[in-house]
Every structure is written in structure tokens, then in C-alpha cells.
Image (cartoon, rainbow, N blue to C red; front, side):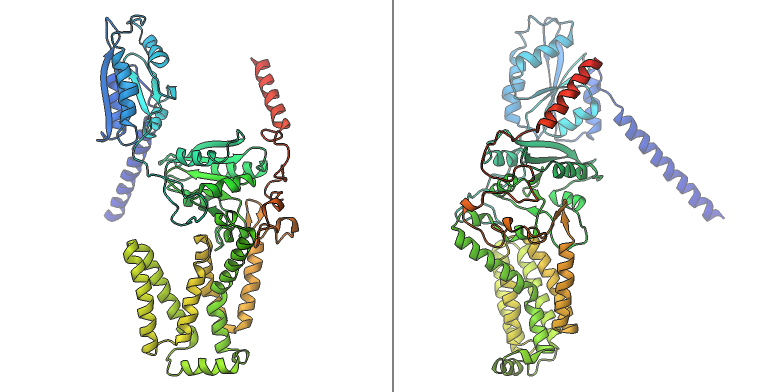
Length: 548
């Protein structure tokens, strides 16, 4: 009885604490900007937990009765040099030059500072407390005046930003050698540097109830499909998460099929890849703090294409694309076919080769499936170790470890030398795929094919292929079939899939992606908002004026 009463008491206490926390949070949201400068500064300190990186600079302006003014910013998020030269120095330099300001009116001092003293690019009036804190935590500088319940927000973001370097995951030979960084404004500017068009639009929103991460949607108005753009905005608006830590979080929230191993969105770190996809009618999603944006919708053949294909001759690019596709088949079916031939269909192997393989397997204690599984797991462990370790050490460990373990396993009679060749060839073939998301999915599906081959031989592999193709055909990426233009069959779009024809023949955009302007040549005056949209906006403005 006492234990039950104690549990009930604890539950009531927890419920009371939860209610108190909710009330405190509600009161914090209802807080307003006060006319008292000291009270505002105290509330800002309390809201940020008296953080050590909060910088406050107080001084006085106006004469003969000097008004107290304060500059507030976050060290590391704001540009200290910009604040010192163009805000604090200008304000303190005008202390004795404000005869036209009524000393009894802080509102006039507020207007005078905003219109005559501040020379930064963007200045905004703020009356909402939560908005002020959000701007402050976004790197902007806040100016407060004693006796006035509004603040001025100055765009003075700064801090340390990683320099633009050569892409590490997508190396360039002939193309531009620059990659995205973690700063959102830098990434969008790199794309604008390549597409100098007023129809390149960028819409920014904040996602994450706690992180308040800046997310930008970039597209070309007049080329992008309006239905696709609406769908993207709706899915982003439905994200209900406390934290948005990167583009991978958004990818998991808005993708079409959560359970498929295939990637349904293209990721890249190269600005020229984003520019090329935008010109085809796709949408790019940038996340602040992440150097890898999302490109959607994505189709299966895109993951075999690289930016290098468009900087070399078309016949060489076509050969390399076909080579990647063959490597994909080797990665997916190589060990499975070896297991099926050895275990179930030895009659399909030429006799001299079969005799050699049988001689190599003399004394091997494991079945061929266990042998392949053991070697595959060993190579996957070496691959993961090479990625996680420091780069110079990781490369040495992965190469030397594979050679030493492979030779030692063959010498010890644990695996056959032919199995080492098959597994090593499969691992090398997997590195020809340009996108890691496709390579990881293929590595995962390879184990499934090995299990089917060990269970039913070639019949199991055939069954797996049927199920895999049926599943892939059912996938959609924002309404676009994943296997387009193969299913549905659109021959006009085959010219830039597994092969690439010369540039003069690439005169049309993919039919299912951009449904508004298919041709890449011709008059561009029809880009921009459609007449229907302009008429709707005019009607809304007329309706608003009539109501007024």
C-alpha cells in the first residue's frame, strides 16, 4: 500500500514539474521587448544562460541628455571587425554630431541611427522577442536603445568558414576544382556564379524547432515543374523535428520510400552538378552547415553519371558509363554467380577451369558459401577501418591488411585463391560507381544475392533479379518513375542515360522532369512566372485594394 502511494506521489510530482516547465516555456514565448534597456539586457542574458560568448557593448548617445545604447552579438557568429568598423565606430563617432535629434525622444534617435548612421547592408526593425533572439543566434547584431521597445537588427554575420577546396568525394580532372562548404550563403552564391539568370530563385525557411536550421530551396522558374515544386514545399512543411542536423535528416523525412535500399535523392558536393540538374528542371535543397545538398527528383541512371562525362568527348564518356554499369553488375552478382556455379551448376564451367578450381578447393574446411561470406565480411571490415582511420594510416592498413590477410588465409587453407580473386575483383569494381549511396546499396544487396545463390543456385539469382526489378519499377522519386526513361519507355531521353551523345543532340530536357520548357534552345522570354500566376497576383492585389 505504501509503495503504491509513493509511486502515485512521484507521478504527481513529475506531472507538476512538467506543468511548471510548460508554463515557464509559455511565459518565455510571451515575453516582450521592454522599454528599459537594463531589463532587456538582463532578460537576454537569462535566456542564453549567461553564456560566455554573449558580447554586450554599452555606451551613450545624444545630447544634452545622453541616451543609453547597447550593441549585442554572439562571438564567433558575428564578424567582430565589421561590427567594430561599421557599427560601433560609426555610432560612437556620431555622439557629438546629433544636434538634430530630440534628446527627449528615443524614437527619433532610433530612426536617426537606422537612417543616417548604420552603413551595413541589411537593417531591420524587430518588435518580437523570439524573433530578436533568433536573429541574434543567427549571427546578426542587435542594437537596443533605452526608452524604446524596438530593436535594430544589423546583418553582420561572420565567423570562421572553411575555404573552398577541391571535392574529395568527386574528384575533378578537367572540370572546375571547387566544392561546397558549410556556409549556406556561400553555396548558393557558387551556383549563381554559374547560372546568371534572374529566374534562378531561392526560397529560405527554418526547420527544426530547437536548431532553427536555415534550409534553402533553389530552382529555375519557368523550367521547374510547378507540381514538383509544390510537393517539395509541402513535404518540407510537414517536417516536425526538434533538430535538423544535415541534409541526410531532410532526406529521411521527405523521401518517397523509406524501406528501399536504393537512394531516391542525388547528393553531390560540386556546384556544376547542381547547376546542370537545375537547368534540367530539378530542385536543389541546401542545408546550412552541410556541404552536400540534395537534388530531386532522382532517377536510377543518374547515379552512373559524373560531371567528368560532360568535360570529355562523348565517345569516351559513353564508354566509361558502360564500364560503370558492367562494374555494377559484377559488384551485385559476382560472388553469387561463383557460388551458384561451384555448388549447383559445375557443368556450366569449362572442364580445364573446373579441374583447376576443384584442385584449389582441396582441403578447404568450409562450403563455398561460408568461404565467400567470410571473405566478404573481412573485406568490408578492412574497408570500414580504412575509412575511419586517419587517411595516411587508413590507406596503408586497407591495402596491406587485404594483401596480408588474403595471402595468409590461402596459405592456411581457410579459403581458396580463386575466392580471394573473386572477392577482390568485386571490391575493386564497386569503387567505379561515382556515388557512394548507390555503392552502399549494391554492397548490401550483394549479400542477399549470395544467400539466394547458396540456397537455389541460378534459380535463386533469377528470383532475386525478378523481385529486385519489380521493386525498383515501383519506386517513385517525387512522382517520377525511378527507372525513367526505361520504364516508362521514352526513347527521346535515352541519349543521355547509359551513353551520352554529342552536345548538339542534347537539345531537349527529360520529358518527365521539366514539362514546361522541354527544348534547351529557343526564346527564353517565357521563363519566369506564368501569365496565369501574374493574373492571380493582380486579382489578389485588386481585391486587397477594394477591401481597403
